Amino acid sequence: MSAMLETDADELKNIVEANWHHASHPKVQRYIGKFFERTRTGSKMTAKVHGNYGVYLVSIEVKDQGTRSACSCYIGKGGGCHHCHALARTFLNSPDSFKVVEKKELRKVVNVEDVAGYLQGTTLEELLKELKAAGIKQKDFADSIGMNPRHLSSIKSSELRNRYYNELGATKLACLWMIEHTRRARKSSRK
Ligand SMILES: [Zn+2]
Image (tube, rainbow, N blue to C red; front, side, top):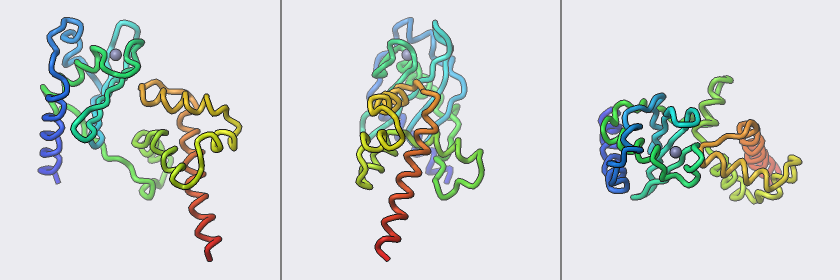
């Protein structure tokens, strides 16, 4: 198992290396190695850093041969800010400093602490995709829980930019209930 994780990290390193070349800028340099609460869940590296206006949550996710980055700073909307560059360098310098966190599966959620682990390992975007696959559109879901569809979109995209709304977790749970309920209801109507 640990051998597999090592290979994983090596693969991730190669892809991060290929996608994040330049880090010589002083604005990037000052953040390299300064990250705390470093974690890696699957192919996503996440850590925090003290920036000019507070603590920023920074992440880089490897997808296929590319990466998707995000930062909660004011210029980090689509990722690619100097915090993201510095996170890439920090990971390349010491991949082992990122604590491997296993993605919680829904069937393994047994207590209230597990709920947090599960919600952190699943984005609202992923849940809304599942919901769509179950035949329920994002807009109809929003309407059903009395939420403005634009607000739902905003919660979804904010999470991808590492900025959270208070109701993010509650919205995920509502979405999850809808997915599970729809599945169960279909199963029993087939009987
Ligand atoms: Zn940033």
